[in-house]
Amino acid sequence: MNIYTLDIIIIILLIVGLNDPLLRVLQSVLGSNFVVSEIIIGVVVIFLMIVIHKYVLRRFFFKK
Image (cartoon, rainbow, N blue to C red; front, side, top):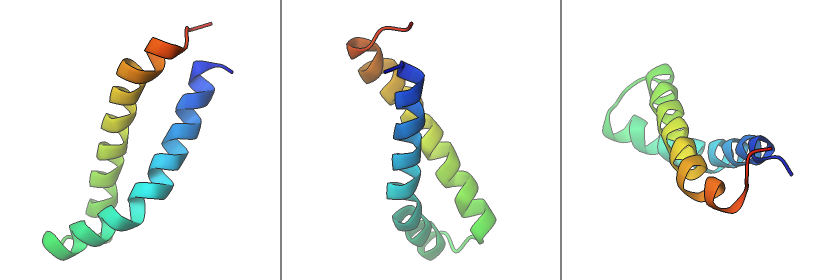
């Protein structure tokens, strides 16, 4: 399996798993609107994906 295929699968799982809980927290704590909350969640997911790709996937899978 290609490492970038794993990236796509992990991004989808992060979005599905983190979107609703983080959206509730951001809207209750910050009182921000939906669009701002989704942008913050997107930034968090991208940051987590970079960390997972760099420190986890690169150690176990080689780029083809």
